[in-house]
Each structure stands twice: as C-alpha cells, then as structure tokens.
Length: 201
Image (tube, rainbow, N blue to C red):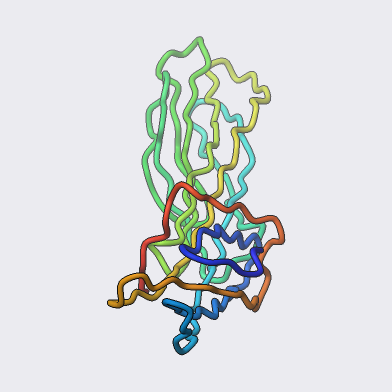
C-alpha cells in the first residue's frame, strides 16, 4: 500500500477477503508554499464473491445436480448462470439459485454432447461487485458411458470506490498519506498512466 505521495492517487487496492475494508487518504492542498486545510477522503474496498462448482457427467435424459458454493464466504452472495456453449444437447437453460438442476437429453444418441455453463456470483451491493463468470462444463453422454472432463478457470476482479478533492486556485497541488482499516492486501499496484475518476456510492 502506498504510504503517501503527491498529485493524483493511482493506487489499486485489492481486497481478497469477505470483509469490507477502508482506506483513509489524508490530503493536504498547497500552493506557492502555503498549505490549506487537510481533509480526509475515504476509499471503501468491498469484497468480490468467488464461486466453485464441480464438473459432472450424466447420461441422456438424466437431471444434473451441480451444487454452487462461495469459498470466500461473502455474505449475501447469490448465483446466476448462462449457457455459453452447447453441442448435441437439449434442455440446457439459463437460471439462478444454489444448484443447477436441469434434465438434459443427448440429441445425437451416439456421440457425447457437452454444455458449458457460466456461473456468475453476485454480492448484495450489485452491480459494482459482481464477479466474472466461472466456466463449468457438463458432459451429456449418448451411450451410458461416463468420463471426467477438465474444469474451467475461475476468474476474479476487485473494485474500489474513490473520491478526491479539486481546487479552483490555479497551481494547487495535493499531498496525501494513507490509513488502512480492514484486510487490504499488502501487494498493491500503482498505475501512473491513468487517473482515478471521482465516484460516490
């Protein structure tokens, strides 16, 4: 975490836990050697829910039973899913809930069919803290012989809300220091090529 600096605040905080964390930036304006009154600006770093589900192989006309869980335990997490690809299978549809339970039928009768679901976990403070989807593959067999399929990759992102001051006095610069409250990861990237836009919740 950057302990302080001057100019635009380009920190990118990461919260990988299930608890909301807070960063307080103490910002002091100055111009021509004269300091103004310091103010505090708060960054709330909310956790993003992750998701886990096991791949499954079933036989034609059977019903899937795919429980969905939230390993990092973000309170209020809900799940929705879409069908991102389907091959030689009927009965797959988008939906929501804690279990994907759908009767799938192999339309070929000989060659295995597949369905890929994208599972999207969401926190109660949506839409800002929705996760990218988790790819889950379902194999539908046509000959009652079942086998394993590889699991797809779980993708995550993190977001933060940041407000910062402005001044109508030409030449004003801002110096700042930080105070952390909550589980902010120590590993933090700073981007010098992009300013943070002011945003209020």
